Length: 235
Image (cartoon, rainbow, N blue to C red; front, top):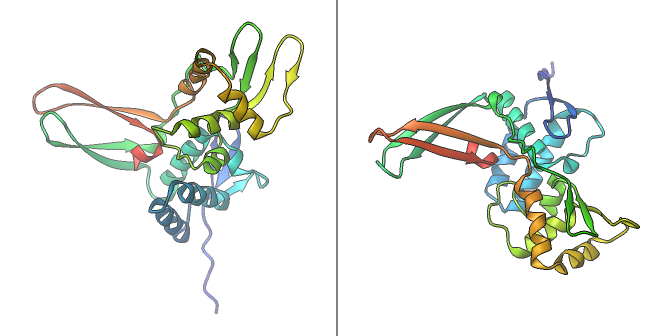
């Protein structure tokens, strides 16, 4: 008799940014291995491994293109996947820079939620004539650029590529400019003066973020905090 096929449980989760309902199964041993291999490779390989695993485990919607999901939706979905595939409690430890002692923490992944900034706006007014409409960065965009979800210091060229990839359209009181190539978008943003380009930073500074604050007292009886930012800080 052939070996039995073990059925996997399924779970439902609503993505916090797109509000899309997802049905998924836990990842298997072979998929965990794929993630571990990707973790040891470069950023692009890591993102491709993550994309492959998520594509494998998502059952519904069947036609979903994982690459089109925002980076925050991807992070939160991956948190849920880790919770249901392994366990929902993650054990972390950090050395305090003041007393040099190691402190341990337990985080319940099921309690995590992205930080949403009420000032986040997809429309950026450059001046009294032009307004730029942007979309939140997606996994496909990050993979193409080779920029990790947890990248803290992207290069200047990476920043231009990211902004260009997020461009939806530019409009004024007479025209809507939405027929352009990626190269033309790059040239548009590189042609902005510093004052106008700085206005775009507010869009990226207020993007939804996966954050969590650990609070404790060290042996010197001082209140201490540790800020966790991005997927990598939780594993």
